[in-house]
Amino acid sequence: MNTNIDAAKRWLQQNFTYDPEVAIPKEEIYSLYSNSVKKDKKPISTADFGKLMRQVFPQVKARRLGQRGHSKYCYANIKKVKVSSLYYF
Image 1 (spheres, one colour):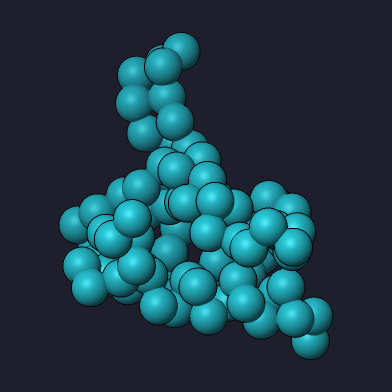
Image 2 (cartoon, rainbow, N blue to C red):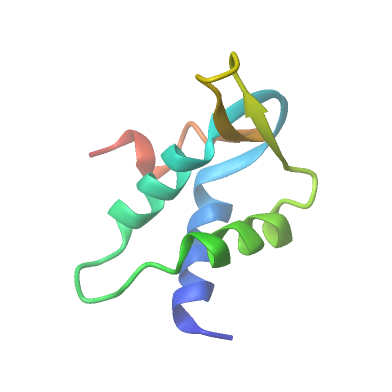
């Protein structure tokens, strides 16, 4: 497997967990991921990230939430892990 994909998989597993009560915008999760990638490496594409998300968290579903014209695409059933590095900058 590609080392960038392996690193992205580890990042997802370390920073997120299943929660049926929570939805997070796709853009926010990918932005957190891409900002966490070291400067000498390139983040995987958004398409590959979405495929990886489905592999790591098969229970997570893509949803469009919000009012018509102001909706956001979200991952439903996932939340940030409170002890993850996302909370420490």
